[in-house]
Amino acid sequence: MVELTVVMPAYNEEERIYRNLLEAARQIEKFEPSFRIVVVNDGSSDHTDAEVRRAMAQDSRIGLITYKHNEGKGYAVRRGMLAARSPYVAFLDSDLELPPYLLADFLSEARKGADVVIGSKMHPDSKLEYPLMRRILSVGYYIYLKVLFSMKLRDTQTGIKLFRTSCIRPILEATHAVKFSFDIEILARASRLGLTIKEMPVVVHFSRNRADRSKIRLSSIFQMFWDAIRIKNRLRREKYRVN
Image (cartoon, rainbow, N blue to C red; front, side, top):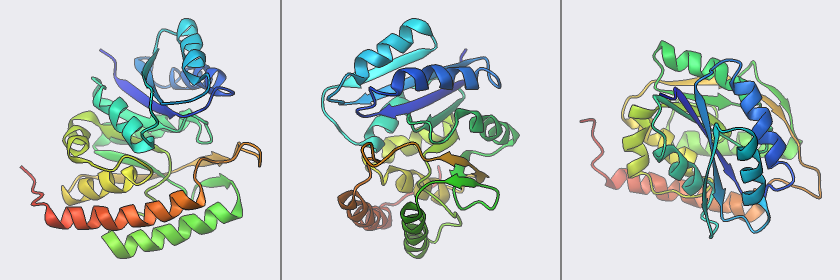
């Protein structure tokens, strides 16, 4: 049986997805030989689908879930993680700004007993190479979420997380967020359930230039702030108990 499933959401990544998938497989196999990478093509309008299939022809451990309409990162990650049948499931941004080898320590922490292991840019041991404005936005968003949810976490949005599949599945089934606020909702639910959440340092290499920028726009940032309020209100209304 596969031990680890790594879900990689992708939207219009035709220029890099082929080589990134093969590189991810090379890095993961060094610490976990029994794994599967599941790419979720989130309604890309370019040739992402074809490039993923080209990687699949090179490495049978790579799989694909694809659909026509762009539904948002949260939807894509949720779709891929619900398809996992391994004891552990992770998700990782397909641009590889966060290197896949980081999952080695994440998996080790999960095997020691952590239910949820998340990357944190604000961990004192993290090594960051990305624009100042993104750092400022990260700190501002952290303060906002701290006030709103009172979670003892320094960073909810870094695109690398690993879970015990048995713990995350019921949370995924109850989760409504489909875009960038997906992370907030699953962590807020995990915290309410009393799951053990471990924060880990990350290495970030910003890979996009001005002509190839991050998919997070100003409108997305405003949407994230609004979505966080809606998640807070939704959780307040729910009678969410540990069974």
